[in-house]
Amino acid sequence: MPLDSACEIAGAIRAGRTSAADVCRAALDRIATSDPTIGAFLTVAAEPALARAAALDADRDAWPALPLLGVPVALKDNLCTRGLRTTAASRILEHYVPPYDATVVERLTAAGAVVIGKTNCDEFAMGSSTENSAFRVTRNPWAHDRTPGGSSGGSAAAVASGMVPLALGSDTGGSIRQPAALCGVVGVKPTYGRVSRYGLLAFASSLDQIGPFARTVADAALACEVLAGPDARDATCMTAPAEGFRSALTGEIRGVRIGVPRSLLADGVDRDVLAAFDRAIEALAGLGATIADIALPHSAHAIPVYYLICTAEASANLARYDGVRYGFRAPAAALGEMYDRTRDQGFGPEVKRRILLGTYVLSAGYYDAYYLKAQQVRTLIKRDYDAALSSVDLVAMPTSPTPAFRLGERTDDPLQMYLADVFTVAANLTGMPAISVPCGKTGGGLPCGLQLTARPLEEALMFRVADAFEKEVRT
Amino acid sequence: MPADFTRADVERIARLARIELTEHEKDQLTPQLSSFLAYAEQVQQVATSGVPPTSHALAAAGTWRRDEPQPCLPRADALAQAPDADLEHGLFKVPRVLG
Figure 1 (tube, each protein chain N blue to C red):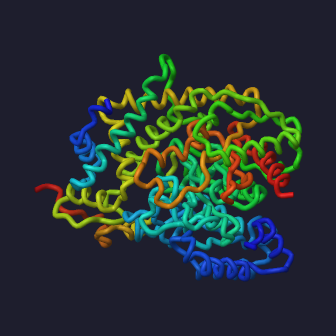
Figure 2: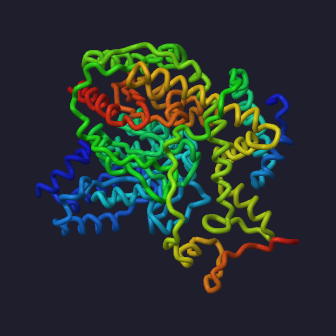
Figure 3: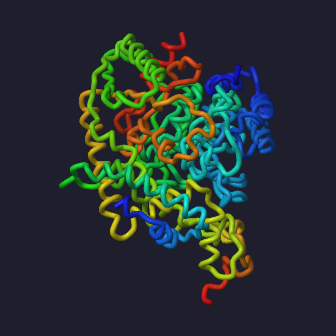
């Protein structure tokens, strides 16, 4: 079986049963064995990781303050790592080496984690299958002819295949939760603003959030404890202090009210996915939760609203890749040509599609009809959730309407690919925290995910229910 | 509106976005963008009279700090990733701007 959980690894090192160096070597061995097939990593930082693990082993005085002592972690390749190549899976940043660490990287490292490498993703986190990477294919560990989901598919696959117990991703419309569901691991999108985004290569700034992948809810809760909290370098980061999320994992969920938007699940959900979801709801009821039907009428428009907003924001954020200060530059005799050719040759098809769509919806004459209208419907979607969450404590849905789909199945139809996000985008549009926790498998043996969405800053309740559910279905 | 979305629109927005597209890319992008915009028409049907737009979901996200000088990225580090730079004078170098 794969490596132990992050909590167990840190405990075992502290108890002297193993060392950070041994744990690190085991992770590197597993990557060497499995990754030629799975394709989770773009860069493996073997030497720096071994050096860091040896330094941790030598510094016993520091151990008591390190909750992630010696835990190998993988980072989605859109998180800046000082001195370690960071590409966003794009040709335009193929050789980019950041001069600084993202805040989340600093925090993981300060907690004792060992950065093992950088994982594959859809280019600039734009996609739902990791197939938009400029560099390699990532395969679902449960079925190698299928995608791991996306955009953080490399991180999900690295955790699911036991290469690392913990990985970070970014979630703009489901890019942590959907691959977590499709790969059978836990994935968390914290409340918007909970976790600093300094050093995250920006895609859509009103939606982007960083969060963990783990094999247990307890590990994900621990990671969020380490990651959360204010950061003066990110003005969109909340001042709310980090909380001890692990202490919320009491196993007691009696009386928690869980809302299910049944009418949203009536069409377009795979039969086995829906059956797994229904069994999960029964299990939650069996644990003492109260289940209620809720209405989220405007969520039917969540996908077009999300894509109008995220493409608009992406068109502005990606203007910085112009071949002047960093990254790829196409040869050209004059500056204007240089910009135009750099961006044509440097960006892949989906990124160009989104930049162009976003440019269109922001352009004179179309702004009110598309962008402003989408922002107004965003308000209505948020009001629906606020109303529902005044009578229930959590909203439950399947994370993804389908299990992992085949490689190549949706690459020719961008709109079909967008529909993968139908249940996940609302948490980004509303800013609410959400988790995907494994909830059984389809008849064909593919993992399914249960998504729980909570009120802003109520991650503790979300973790408590997910943890109780996880323990119930494991036993 | 999507019915009117043409290859000329693709060319216009590509100029605004500073992306040089090949003829093949224009052939592909015209129906792809048009079909998304047709799909997104459903948003136009939603009644939104008097509804304020949401640009950021949570007002609590967004903090101020004092505007005080602090150490920043050293110039050499900032220039180190440039495709072309004059390290001695601290300059990014680009091709000629004017014809």
